[in-house]
Image (cartoon, rainbow, N blue to C red; front, top):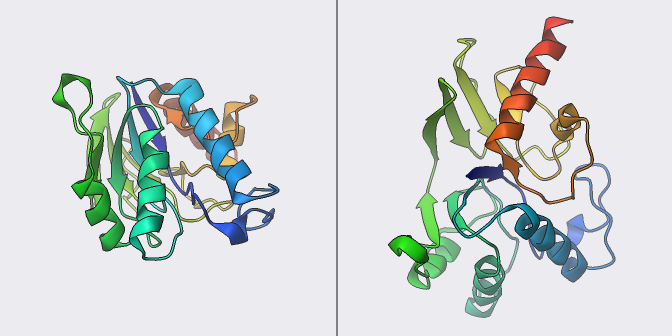
Length: 200
């Protein structure tokens, strides 16, 4: 199964008490990291793929810091396909690629995309980017993005899949903070957002 997430911001100290820009209130970064890791592994298994749409972690540009990020990411289930976010350095991507692991079926643990990628499912075309992207109002084009944390784009064709996304409220249920969205959840959110906009 495929999952989607963004804006984990592992190790980002200034976000741990941020209830406005993000939706976080933790004692320390270790507690935040652990919550996100547990929520991820609660739903993702090793055969799954998670599309991470940017802002993986915020660390200084030193090898030891990249090593910590790599160790954390390797503790997460599944293959991770990265789209580069504004807080993701090329140096970190190069480090992760150099220390990539091989999963079952000879799949690489990490795959990398600088700008974005396009997927097709449910007869729709999904543009996966870090920044919101205006894809027009054709019914079969949807942009899955992160970057804006507790904000939303005022278009039914854009869906914020970041872990702080207020659009998770469209699912009308309890979710663990940090849990990636499944394709089933993505389709429910798209329909609910369209229905919501149809009433305006």
